Image 1: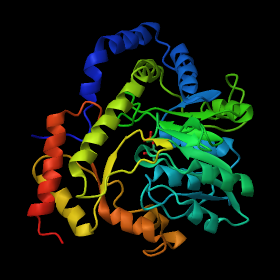
Image 2 (image 1 turned 45 degrees about the vertical axis):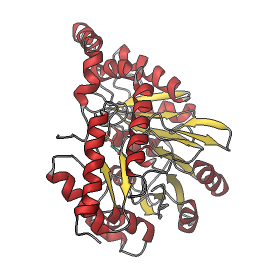
Image 3 (image 1 turned 90 degrees about the vertical axis):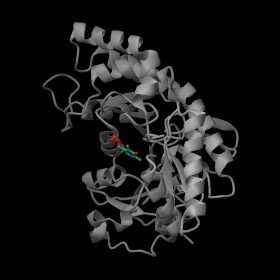
Length: 378
Ligand SMILES: *Cc1c(COP(=O)(O)O)cnc(C)c1O
């Protein structure tokens, strides 16, 4: 049995009529650019995440870039982030003229290690960008405490963690993206809340950041042809906003389903490899389901075997950012961030989407087991 990484059509079938009606409605109104569906979705999205404001933008990468500019991150500032993330997190830091500084990760959660963040702070440090990787919330109590102590801005890269939650101070459940000064989101189809194309959003409680973001996404303009600043063409498409409003109503249920799939994976693979460890103060959104093996050979063998039998899989991410050619000028090398180096060599991700059936789950876990017993890996 072939098992895909994600199955967009499985999530589409039950809500097809509702989505097609909403799309036709936009077509008939032809309000394609910043139509009322965008404002409606922004209100719903902000309310869902417990934020005062949300600004819809073209994609999650632009969301990061504009969040950095609106928060006042400038040329020469140092911004501490994770080396174990998609390059969008760091390329946008560079694109606003700042310098990405990679801190090490925690080998269990795969997220930024607060102790390593503290070691990277210099007088030029301006911000921290925690990435809730795969949908696992970062240690936000520690990160916000460091930020408060050093007067730093926190922009949460929540591209993989919409609907993930963290219990701040051990008592207040907060959504990821709602704890820092801004949260950035991606509606790339494969994310927890996927559009039928590209999309993104930024949430904030700050009135000034909100006003700046609305200008930035629309060429620095509030009133047409009056430009208080330079900006971008980065608006959330009205058709996508209409689709996202419908999908938003289902996303919590999908996250529950993803968590059930995760439980079944973990039960079947217990003792064979390391399955995600979700702390009691966190709810994982399981955008990805990632295993860790004790050796690279076992990981490589599992990956090879799954691919051979038609089970999709992926290494997120095979080369950490500090080792990428794009960052050669920063002088990073193996050994600088030892936890990250070890993790990138030993993880890989299994198919993960809400509708995965028990039969598919068994096919996948049987294949992982077979790779461990049949394989020559030591
Ligand atoms: C997907 C992703 C982004 C970028 O989002 P796009 O909508 O694809 O531009 C940024 N950061 C992380 C961690 C991501 O996974």
